[in-house]
Length: 219
Image (tube, rainbow, N blue to C red; front, side, top):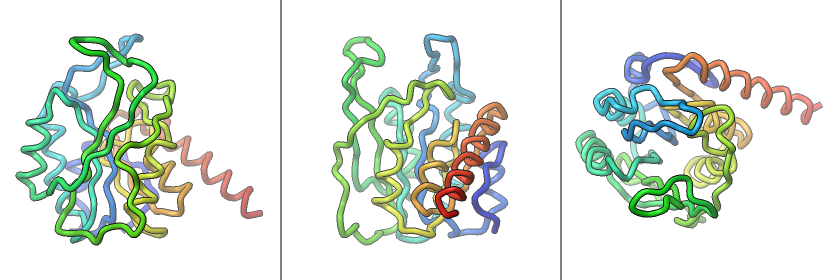
């Protein structure tokens, strides 16, 4: 199995070609199923297609090793759909993480001032020796590369907290590549899958930059 790759295409189709139980950790930020459009009019592929998003978790469960973690951001408006999809494939909810924001990203009936993710498990992974806090510090990425880009500093603590050096980290909704960058910078292998060719190019460029940085550091 080749690792440290950014693959462009449908995640369910691509993952179907991988062996069972080959991934140590999943960290992902799927479309929230809310028909999101940012201030510049940018949208997300399949953000109006629950089957295309939630169906990927069947393959996610299959490729995860026994007693391992899947950490998934989600949209609160579709929490029932996400929860049912996770439960139906066998993922158990064992934790929840919140990132408070110093600003409101949107306003509706309330001001939107946080992001959140569920900690899911396949089986019963051993508890980390030093569990991370379920309230984490948020850093705004600026969304320059992607309309919902998470900063590497947001993803990195998840990777350090729920995997070990040398593990394989999968993100089936890679976007502009933050999960893969965080994995590479923290001594993990990565496998990123992204449907949109534009963001595949961005993610590969970012990982090439990480490789050059690591080469200079090692010289």
